[in-house]
Image 1 (cartoon, rainbow, N blue to C red):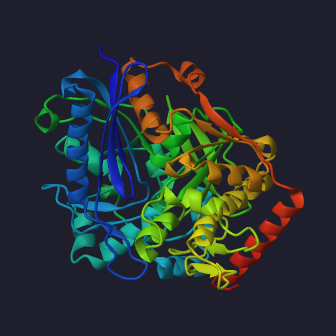
Image 2: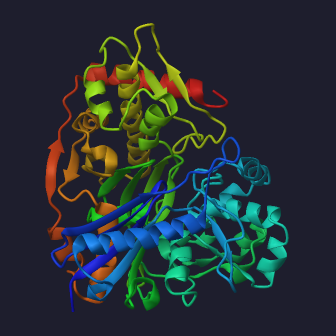
Image 3: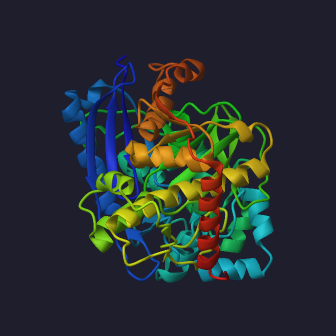
Length: 497
């Protein structure tokens, strides 16, 4: 059997397809951006049909780029933007409305209402999550309440709910497979991560019929076979994981105490806690890192909603840069005497604050502040937010988090300036891997190992290679002053600050 494995990486702003060969090297790529839809302030939607079209086209691109046919693939793995909700008709496969994206905040008041009923502790106990619009459950409940006839149709079993992975698998298999994996299920507010099952109590509270929920599988499992009419061959779908868990796998963070942080549209840090389901006292999330061979590995997660999206804002919103790559040089020449802080709460603040009502703010502007200072502030904001997450993780889990080396990936890690500033503000080493396509690699490894054409977990871990380690090199007094300024900026940004 060929060692070629295809990974579909369906992200928040673009879809990518990547072909890996038997030595786990990238040999073919395809990428396509799709429309971001903002119906109202704080609302974010995607057109599921446009996402589907982007998947089909990027897979064809990647196969052409690799110079192979679909029949040459041993397996397919999928990784996806998490928490984004799609509901479609079981009979036709047509979505009943646009997908509601993880960044969407329309259910903030609903979450507050559930909190007033003293239900957050119940949700956190069962799911490891908190009541925030970020997660899928309240988005689904909103859709059932606001799309005419949806709740009655769902109760009859006429509608299907899924995160993006489930929707894509349904389409790829022409409706034969209605499934998800444990990592995506764990982000819905409806899945009991201790019992590994949909939770009837939570479904009742959210008024979600169980009939519309998919079957939950391990991350490496038989998810169905691609209809040969789509790409020209029947390809087994053997690996699925949400994007942050896939990156954790791709970074080979299999041992408790290992930590990775991904810098894409948002920033997501995961600390592997092994079989230990750590209950956070510092507003972090307890989540499933992966489930393999029926065994669940847990993680503490800190979620930052805006990372690379802040750089996009500089480019598209303010028009002060032409491309994201310009921020590196601009940050280097920013005036060191100006302390400009950008708190990028464009869609609220995530961990550890969880303030859905907070909105972005800039502090410390002077008449001399310009594109260089704003670029530095946007890049530093990512580093400061990561420091907040690391501090919370160290308070929550004492089994090695204090001396963690951070493995990083995502588009922003190409910036040497940002990675050095990250190490400086964390006061901890930061490791950038040789292979930066870690999210796609994680999904590909799940599929390739399941197919028997890629190495097992231990041998895969041994293949991880570091491109560069960034060591902290900042005076402690300077670091302390900067962190104090950041905390003050966040305090003044919080909706009740």
